[in-house]
Amino acid sequence: MQTLTIDNDFLKVKDQPKIMEICEKAEILFSDKIKKINQNEWTQDRQLVITPTKIFNIHNKKCKRAIEIKDLEGISRNVVGKKAEFTIHVASEYDYRFNSEK
Image 1 (cartoon, helix red, strand yellow):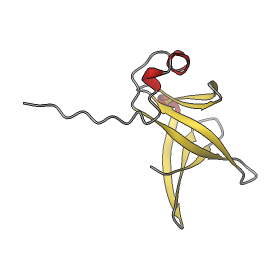
Image 2 (spheres, rainbow, N blue to C red; image 1 turned 120 degrees about the vertical axis):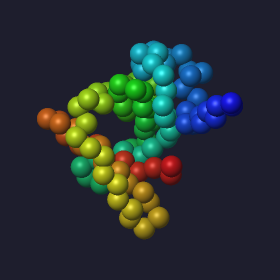
Image 3 (cartoon, rainbow, N blue to C red; image 1 turned 180 degrees about the vertical axis):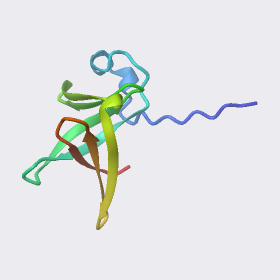
Image 4 (cartoon, rainbow, N blue to C red; image 1 turned 60 degrees about the horizontal axis):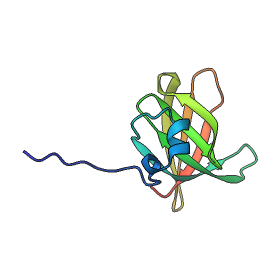
């Protein structure tokens, strides 16, 4: 039987040693360019990387925030016009709001 593997590493993090180091050389479940929406409704370009244990917000090859998966309260999705937004809700911390093409 043949196994189908889906590659969701759109940024090819596996080929970027500096980013892999930030991500603790963990398995990459997903990576892509996204827009973080701050409290003033301004967007900021970011790279979102998801591993089995953490979600990383990366900017200019530096980790801005690493969220433990175990600390997630949930993820909500909202479609505004043609833009798909989602918010990562974190227990005992502030939430993260993003929009993405994927």
